[in-house]
Length: 282
Ligand code: CAA
Image 1 (cartoon, rainbow, N blue to C red):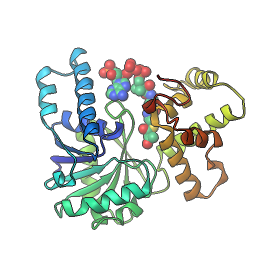
Image 2: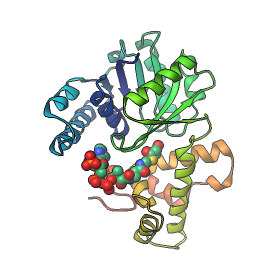
Image 3: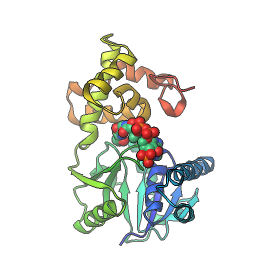
Image 4: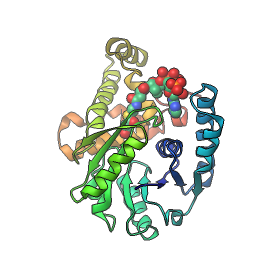
């Protein structure tokens, strides 16, 4: 039974995961090295829940109870009694490995570790811990409170008890699971990111402008967001990391990251979170 959940990383994914766990009645501990980010994250969750209250989708009492279930801390020792810790740090293998190594001595021996990686090998990340049998991929979609899906990915050593616990938790969070094998970028991003990369090539080659490409896919294919708007929303650094994992992991030139995407990331134009990407948000 998973009752106490820990989340590492107070960015957009970590914050969303904390929100859905707290609303589902779980105790949540959120940790980030940046104390200011923790404050921002909890304020953002409170704002989201206030909107739910205003729309009549959540009672004031349930909102207060959910917020009271969230504890934050900058130290990994906050996870000492967590049943599950979900790592939702930056999408960079070295960063994730470093965090996982530091996390292990702070955990109870029976705790499960899940990673929210959107592309990196679960088996490889599991090897950075002392418990590959109790390690699993639990990939939420952005924005977490709205998106229905959780991809669940077993590493080569993940045991059945861990898999069943995470499947049951997914249901408890009101989400639907899709089970993916441990191949680069799993299912969603194996399909979604090459489409986004192709949209950037379409811009790079002058086939269409930003607005034309997004309008074409929104109105021509009924996508809720155009691919360039979606790239800005995901973060161009994350998009590039995923394309690099696909390109290196599958060794096929069809996954070559578009040079324009590389250039934007090098410029620091990472999308909505920094105020500039394919669109200007300032
Ligand atoms: N956090 C919390 N809730 C949010 C939100 C956010 N960031 N953004 C929107 N919402 C909520 C709104 O409050 C609203 O809630 P109610 O239905 O309860 O009123 C609901 O979502 C719809 O929002 P809006 O009416 O304001 O806007 P919309 O209809 O344009 O929908 C959207 C917004 C849900 C984000 C929609 O544009 C969409 O589905 N976009 C595509 C998202 C997508 O593809 N996500 C996957 C990205 S890939 C990924 O995550 C994998 C990866 O590893 C990279």
